[in-house]
Image 1 (cartoon, helix red, strand yellow):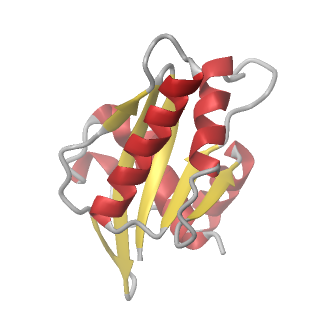
Image 2 (cartoon, rainbow, N blue to C red):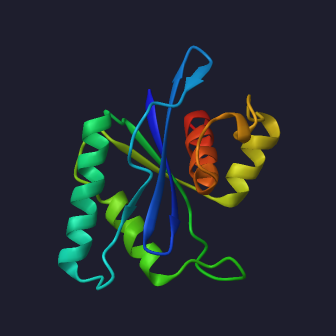
Length: 143
């Protein structure tokens, strides 16, 4: 199953694709590393962001999206824009795409019980994609 891990950062949804098959994972090639919400954040901009994200998922054949959840308050609280993007992704109308939110606690406990099989540095991904990669890996393990 092909999973798209997502980290919301500023006006960007950083993405990483991960495919798991019989315990082996692969990182499918894609030129898209992030999808950006335009700066005005109007209704039309949000609809365009959602359409771009939906198109990306359809082109790649993604069946599941795992988003690292934004905290509503505290030291690592997410900004208002990231919550808009999170909602836009969750409300994607595609019936064949499952969207899950992964809290930092869930990610931490899952990695403790099922550590990453390969160091991130050996994946060939960009440094800014690490959190999205971890979300995709944990999203695969989360049922």
